[in-house]
Every structure is written in structure tokens, then in C-alpha cells.
Amino acid sequence: MSSNKLKLFSANANPQLAQEIAEYLGLSVGAAKVTRFSDGEIALAIDESVRGADVFVIQPTCGPVNEHLMELLIMIDAMRRASARRITAVMPYYGYARQERKSRARDPISAKLVANLLTAAGARRVVAMDLHASAIQGFFDIPVDHLPGVPILGEYYKNKHLENVVVVSPDLGGVTRARNLADRLGTGIAIIDKTRPEPNVAEIMNIIGDIEGKTVIMADDIIDTAGTITLGAKALLDRGAKEVHACCTHPVLSGPAIERLEQSVLKEVVITNTIPVDPARLENCSKVKVLSVAPLLGEAIIRIHEDLSVSRLFD
Image (cartoon, rainbow, N blue to C red; front, side, top):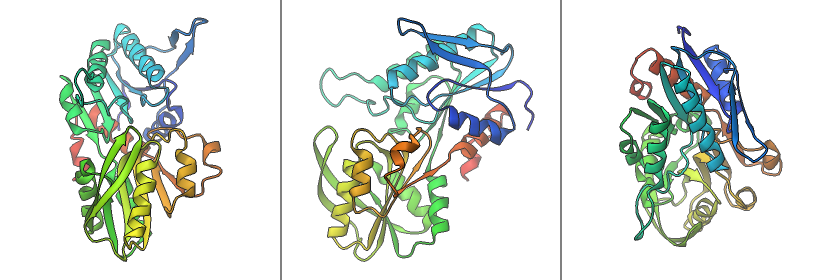
């Protein structure tokens, strides 16, 4: 790969992932520092030239979401004003993706607002992983490369050589994701049909498909409070599953999530590092396995920089 004029930068959301991507590409993370003024405003210093460069800013907009989103916007704006040739926002996790439509009257569509802000700041391309709704790609008038996490998760489970496997979607909206993972593993799928009486509370209603005596892999894009996954796992065991594993691309892991996972019937929970998880939080949770998305993002960056097809990564 030619590194001519390819530059990587990172703000504060996930510098470890940025470093892993840089090492994969044989580059260094660019010299930039994001701090705060005394009143809390974001201060940015870019300590090297980006004139004419193909710049990739690596910044998931995970919690604190608004802080990390503003860091990303300010860095993109600074790169544009410093005459970068092209700026790509690499957002392993796209915050506000769960607000992609109006569920009730007068609801905002915040995912679209974020798209507008990124474009206005100066981004000319976006790379994201496992958007909560793939239609978010259409909120942009610039190219969006939407990378699935399934290849990483699928390779992991192939190497575990689990027997008599079925992939389960924890809700009707995740059927496509479950089908893609099942296709990679050569298994069937099942679906948990549930109602959600209030935000972050899930009630299991029915299981569609054959899971009796099988090793179940529950696949989701996000684990937030872990209510859906842990209640779903219990329902699956109650219906005759042999054992239940779970995986997700984005470990939001809010509030009691870690404790719920550790105390659940789940045998193992596989996550990726699109969002950083403090190792100290995992010390008392032996069930969580973290996979790196750095090679996938690194390959995507190479292909974008060299004007090659990104979709060929998944053929």
C-alpha cells in the first residue's frame, strides 16, 4: 500500500482502536490533541500539515455521545480549513442511529441530523459498521461505506467448531443480520418475537423456529442494558435449547449490563471493540470475549484510499 498522503487521526472516543488500525496499516496516528477550555468547550490542536492529504478521522460517537460527536465535527472542520484533499469520517459506532424514524408524533429523526452535521462540517465520505438501520446510508448525499460485523463474528464461531447450531435473532428487526451469520455458519435461524412495554425493558413473547436441543447463538447489533439478550437467553433455555451464546458488534453496555451478563444463563458473550470497554469493568465478568475490528477497518481504509472496491471485502 502506498502511504503517500494518507493520514489517520483520532479524537478521544477510541484512541486504542485508532492505534490498532495505524499499526495494521504501518502508519502512525497523526499529531492532534483534543482538550477542553476552562468553560468546557472543545479545544483542538493539529500539529502537522494535512494539506492535500487523504484524511481519515477515526471516532465512534459512543458515550458521552454529544462530546464525541462535537469532537468529530470540530476535527473535520479543522481538517477542511487546513486544505485536506478529502476527509473520511470513520465511525465504527454511529451514535443516534436508533433515532432513525418517527415512532410517535413530533419525534426527531436525529440520525438524519447527524448526517447533515457531518456533511456540513466537511466530511466527504463516511465509514460505519452495522448501522442500527441500514437505511441511514440514504440520509447522506455523500458516499457511505457500511461494513458488517458478521464476517468477524462468523470467523470466530467457525473456529470454535460448535455443533448443532442455530442462530437466533432477538427481535424481528434483526432477522437479516441473523440470516447473514447463519449463512456463514451453514445453519438455520430462529426468531424471538417480543414486545417492549417501555424503553430498555423487553418482554419475551414467543420463539419462532426450532431451538430444542441446539446450541444457540443470539446475534444483535447492540447490547445496551443487556435486558433483551439475557431475557432472551433464559427464554431459549426454558424452551429446550442446549446452551446459549450471544454476540454483538457494538457493546454499549449501559448501567447494569455487565452484571446482568455475568449473572445470566449465557455461556459466552462475544463483542467487538467498535466501542471501548474499560478492562476494569470486565474484571468480574468472565463471559465476555472482545474481537478487534481494526483489520476490517484498515482494509476498508486501504481500498478507499486506493479507489478500490470496498464491497469486494465481503464477496
